[in-house]
Image 1: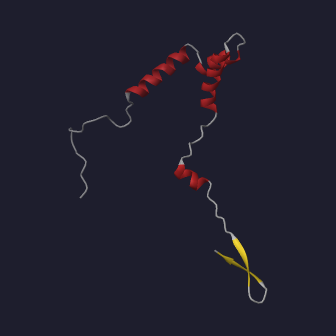
Image 2: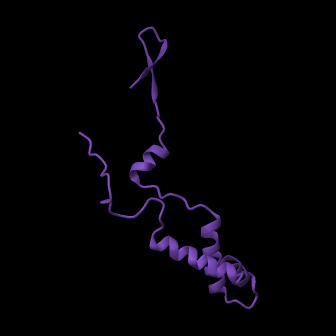
Length: 107
């Protein structure tokens, strides 16, 4: 038998539709960045194309930008590899009958 929802004033927990702390913090940071008209992706891109930026830092900037622009490949383990690259091989060997006619049998 299914449990009935409590009716009355004794409902505990968060109200439906309310935001958790991480969502509120993320929205606050985005609002502060928007108020100052600062775009972190634009800052990374400008560092990546600046000729005075060291090569190591350019590499890190480009790698970080690429992680948001290009999808990451799912790793293939032993179990998924068999499904991803499955194919069947049949080997047939010709056999001569007594009357010298060739027939093919599967083994």
